[in-house]
Length: 502
Image (cartoon, rainbow, N blue to C red; front, top):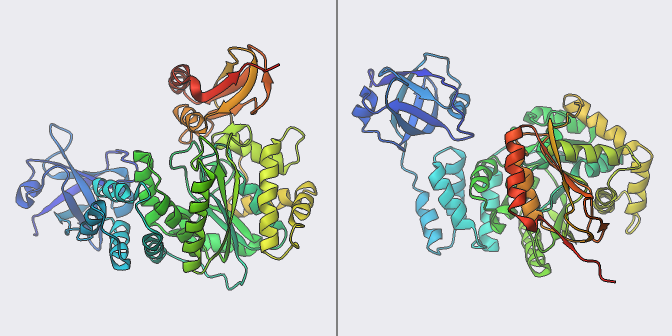
């Protein structure tokens, strides 16, 4: 064992969040341990250790005395350049037996769910094994009881806030509707009325922006557990990335693989939402379920089923959950992408004359329901209070205060490249394909390039003339703009214009 070490080096290889270790296949450690490509390896330096996937290299990239770590592995292990590291096979992942059983139709017990989530959280699952777990949960394969078991296990895997309050509010949208960035506005209105709303949000899974991506263009969202607690105590609310405070941390690991597979199973989504609300210390949660032919939820029947699963899972973990089924036939606001959505949010909070009214009205509706849930307004009177809070500037002041408490309010920077898409003919805007629009914005670079995305200039039912601007594609690189344009030119179903019936 004393000779079974290599010196660590940091070549700067980005493997996203997957820890990877690189070795020569003819180095003494590989030969002694019998390692091969894709082996799961425990890497130890002193008291710290991680589990990583082994990639074998040849040629002059590495000497026989060195092992290289990907950026993800380096961050987790936190060594110094040249540190000694010792290597051995990672332990067998026994909980994969439950995953295989689920793939063949076996029900997950609470013990099985706990073992799976624990092993994922401890980094024992490779990305291939994670993909198997995500696939096993897809296609509505999880029953309500299994979803509750997974949710409990996910809550137990991370830290949890306890605010000592009887009323702690939260909201969530199940997604599938580009530009639906109501959360910053809702949090500002609710917190301005003295209610507690410690809002944590995810980054994008399959969309061009998540709330955390959008807020990161305006302020710091990567808050520590104690920093988030301080912000909420000072301001009554926050707008933080959930992954930074280790609230249900397994969820962020799973989301990474769901994004790569473009899968978002209902049961895992319910577990994700409810586990993070419980971990955030929430007591009352409002969940928006947009329904439309190209939204994530495509029918009222599916929406009711999802609503039932969310309410039952929430109740099993002590949450009071209320759902709202909303219109999901077209994007919300004008911008799709972090910077463009942040611009729309600021326009609404500033009561700008040209602020997108659909975003304003959706945010007011959700804020009204939360104000009534929180006892600040009587039934059917929440909308008036929400409107007063927005129009008076109180919501804007609270939003700015939250941003300053989180690290300051940052200016927005537009993309370097834009291209206007014009109507090929006159007629009526008859269809927006939300999924294809989201894909188009993603190909333009969003959310990794924050200023990239789409600006919409028309709405459903609007009359347009040939040559009139329909949308503008924003990109930070000319190559991404060309890529997005190629996609648009081969996907005419992005937006449909029909002849006007006289």
